[in-house]
Length: 118
Image (cartoon, rainbow, N blue to C red):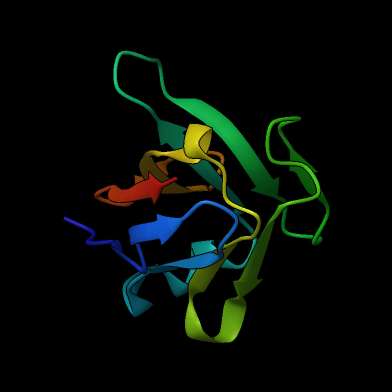
């Protein structure tokens, strides 16, 4: 079983910043670089939603709710991906999940909670 480890979540004050990280094991080196990376989030009582995506060429797409505030990035050499969250709002409070889509298989992080204090 491939273990994908998320980190960086926790409590943040509204208007503040937080950086989420996701580390993938070296065993999937051959599929990480060509894969598309995404961040999803799920708030209580809501469905999981896609908020940011980066393809293997570095092209990004964002949900309107986070556009201009969040930024997805990747470090292929270290098999890591990140979500920089700026100007965090109370409505950003959720469990965040990282995702690698290789086209044939998906890898998910375990989920990490972000709590926003106002």
